Length: 332
Image (cartoon, rainbow, N blue to C red; front, side):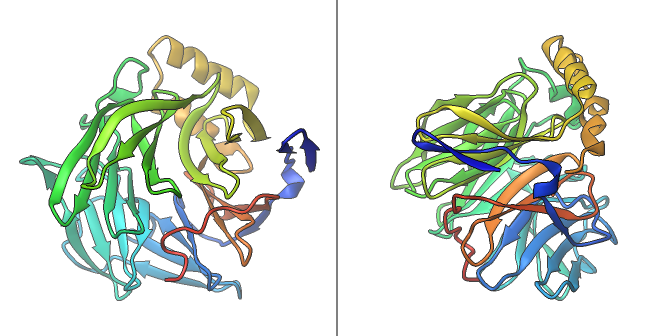
């Protein structure tokens, strides 16, 4: 349901507003849509790779079959490249960023930084200048150790014509990171920092000081986000299965709340007392959204919002009154 309230459109979605596509997906955490109508999603089944959901309803599986395949390869966030291949953040124990060709060949793209082996990686984003931005949630081998509000050991890597380097650190469990439509800012969701922060980008790609753009409220554990053409930012929350829009004036509205109250309250209490564990995270899997993890706009008018998840075997979608911005991969 869409209503006008002052300068903003208020969206109150119910379960009936969602449609679903795809089947037999495993951990389709990230979604990438193109102008041609393709929807690509990460897939942890069959050895790990990417699935293309076609408008006809058919599915094409691009699974890692040859090359340097790490043990326990789990695709998380990924970027579609101009040649049709994919840069994939491996959230498995061996970590790293890998390039997957559509023929199933997997090769390392970045497996260490500053002399250290990369741990599990969360997200990889290619911007319009062909720079690659990578988020790593934590250095900890056991990522649960960083499920605390007072730990901020996540960091951001930039790969450009100067090579790979860490450009931001001390992030509270770094999750999705994207360059905004102006090209002037890098935004980062902090899952355990419970905020979305941003950094100015200079002409060399280096980042300025961190700014907190918005703090999230009780029960929100931010994961993915995307920008719309009116200056809003749409964010997804694991556990509570909420979709939130941050309006251009900084106010926030709940678009959808698909979580179980007892589950959310238990997770919130654990978070506040620094005893939050993976059990609190997976408790959100039973929502209609399957623990929503990301959002990406697509469709011919960029007004269809697709929702990635940690636990569903399909992708949820809804129609938005506001179009998303044209992403860098739109014409690939």
